[in-house]
Length: 181
Image (cartoon, rainbow, N blue to C red):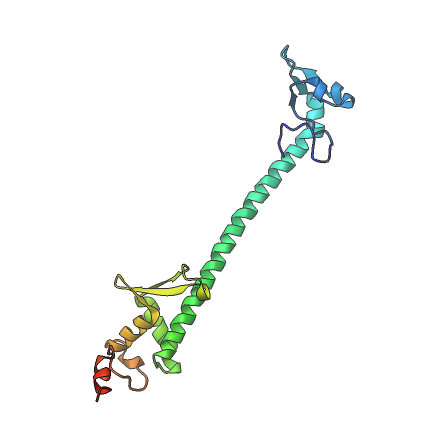
């Protein structure tokens, strides 16, 4: 609402504190205004100001504050929801990577806990498929979550989490040599 507007959207008079011309005021309310100076400006008399306009001004200010509070709460709620979605995406990705790497089911939570303490995770939302891709950063190096789990299992720290015997990491070069026979 424009505080200088003379009429509400429904056509009713707003009783502004000052009007530039008395001619703009409906005839029934012209007695409520008194001239301020020779410039033609008129002011709403105090009695009418207190009864007609001031309560609405206060209510309007209160509503504006409530609206600002609601907007701030909405932003906070949206940020909290986004963090929860990201945390869920990270946990699901880490769990499936641990399961895919062969970590026994009873040890997955422990491995996830250790990996979460050693690395930071973020969801890269630039990939549209599946709501983003989880990227792990450990010791300043970014890696996929699967790569992080593999390097963890290949380390001494991850030895206790290894499931059934795994093939040594390779790029497939030696396997391709064997296939040429």
